[in-house]
Length: 310
Image 1 (cartoon, helix red, strand yellow):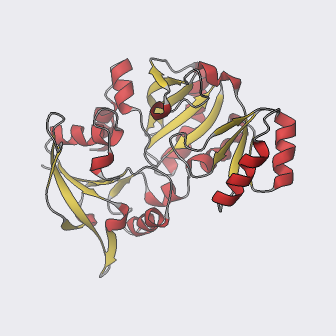
Image 2 (cartoon, rainbow, N blue to C red):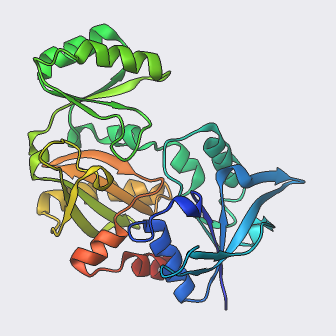
């Protein structure tokens, strides 16, 4: 039987054919001759009691030609007719994205959605991990200047980052003698209406920021991301280098600690980041790393994921 698989995700034209995890999942589905439906958050509507999306069918992905995607024209699709839906657009959250999660929540008990929309909405990457404070670096989320100054005085070296950023954007390392600190705080206060994050600096970042992919609450693959010499960020698209790795006993304990709650919440596909022995992020919107895990560990996570869902 041919299955119909939906992907709420970013525009195809902006994705990397070599690196993108969502495209790895789509290619696995195409190999199985599934019908693939692509739509954006803004294309989801509620009409006459039904959740509808203006969608394109993806017929083919061919890296050797331009354009690389062969698709249909837009088709109005009742999303209850799909067998499986993936939520895969990148953060940050905006109101279009939030609205789509509310609309998809109407059908989340009738169609399997990865990850469950109501729980994705309630588990922003940099907030969700605070359910496990004993596993994380010391963190404050605030715009209170007095609290910020006390935190810096206590830890000397700190990390400053936006609450809803992604991919390493807007992350700053500040040491105790950095004279740019006050200016940076002023910029954050002016440009971010919401609170922002300060964390203690973890010197083990020089050894890497490990991304572990969990499927159904179990670790299935990992890569280590090493920052470049002139940066503290290990994100691959800002110069971090992926390397082969194994999951340590301490990291396995972290996975075993958070895994049951991920399953309970319907968070089937999750990527966690660990520096040293500290959990720094839990990615539930569009965790990446499938291509790198396949390259360095010969583990096809897309195949494992689909096998576990179908």
